[in-house]
Image (cartoon, rainbow, N blue to C red; front, side, top):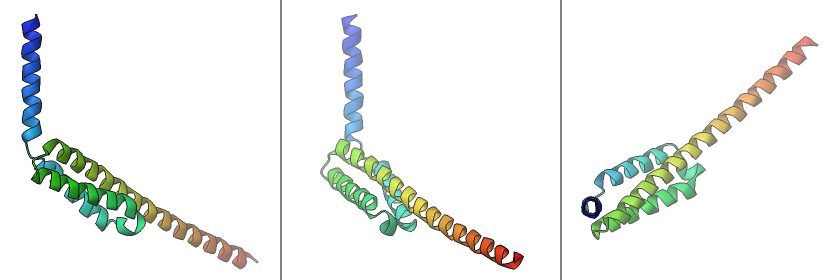
Length: 119
């Protein structure tokens, strides 16, 4: 039974080492796309902190990958993607809030016109 546990540990360790040596190119690419999308959504104006965090983590992910630190690179790329998604969501929320305010103002104007015409 001990040999089975030892063999399982060796296999798991080998798998983890293999993952640690694979460049996180897909993770970095996904983060790049997410950052670009956040920029298109207007995050630079409405959510600059989250966008900056995403950009900084993406830059760090690239640097770590260049140094061969794949685990740290992957982690930072994944965090960059999440930060970029948050920035994009905040940008969309702000845009929706502005649209709602404009709609509410239009409704108030229409209500005032209706009341004025009713007199």
